[in-house]
Amino acid sequence: MTYTVINEAANTPGGQKFTNLGIPYTKEILPKIHMYVWNNILQQTNPADRKPIDTVEIFIKDVDGPYEALTDVNKINVSAVALNKYHGDLKWEFTSLMFHEMTHVFQWTCVNAIKCNYNLIEGIADYTILKANYYPSFFAKPETGNKYDQGYDVTARFLEYCDTLNPSFPAKLNKMMRYAYADSYFKNLTGKPVQQLWKEYKAKYGQPI
Ligand SMILES: [Zn+2]
Image 1 (cartoon, rainbow, N blue to C red):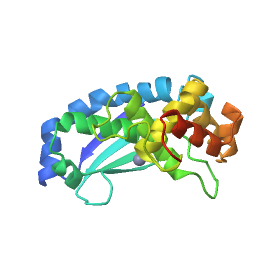
Image 2: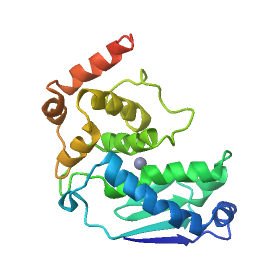
Image 3: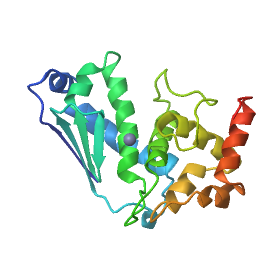
Image 4: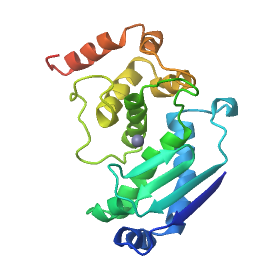
């Protein structure tokens, strides 16, 4: 596996912040995060289960989008403007971001399917930062949210609950999402329809549906 890190925004405030954080630091954490995602989250010990990717490229770009980063297959494009807006510990924030984006690089997103469940995909990526203990203080608490695939932290917490019903649930779900997605996957893995799971999840914490 090769990791490439290119700062295309070195002359911007956010790009300068990244220069200070360091390409060496980034190259140091990427293999560790990569192994964490493979072994602990997706649990793809069999190479046949993995995406055929041998290079991960990080680009720091002078763009201000709605997102901190956008991952396209094996390319993680990070917004230098977003980096400049971080007011906490940049090293921590950037590392957390890499846990999320590296999950996108290696998780399955319904190859060749017309549609997938992208909120669920975001939930799996946030499940990684939850389990890696790189989640922010404003991360959703277990009882919050309106639906199972609301996305991001809300869905990550629901996946954490599903993992108590069927260990390695997110890994198993990811494997099933290789070519397609269907709500029935939840029933296949737990014996219960996803809407019932969501109701029981909310009831567990005494929340009205
Ligand atoms: Zn994402």
